Length: 211
Image (cartoon, rainbow, N blue to C red):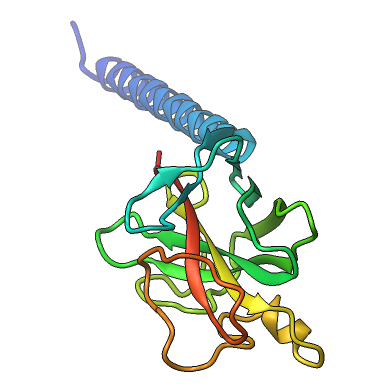
């Protein structure tokens, strides 16, 4: 006579086997997901891009491209490096270059120092600077810490500080308002350069779109 006593252990064995197989499949799927995430993280860490763009000035109320000038921006997951090669500068004047960074969300940019020096007799300038992830902005607005090197829209703004003045040159080539006096242009608009002592203004810009 047939008895169910054999059937129940067999059923239990089948159910246990199915459960173990499903668990194994889940573990394999989880491992695949983790590997995919690790590959994506590694790709982001190793990704980089380089963009080059023109440099603009506004000497007489109309924006124009400076012939032979160019701006280069190298992006990695760790930060950005800029090289700003330009012309039409006044020999003996002090200049600073600034990172102007827009966040991924809409809103005004934040800015921070990139480089600065006094220009020689050629009137040419070569400025280079680096901004690392985690660096704080000198003028934070939407962003207080730099965290979007691969996607940020980045402008490079060149600022004149007028003729180099003995005793305050370090301020003129390292700070936003070093050597500046009141009554001169301010804000993001481009203005003409000048050899007047104490004159400060943003005079050139390069714009690198976000990715």
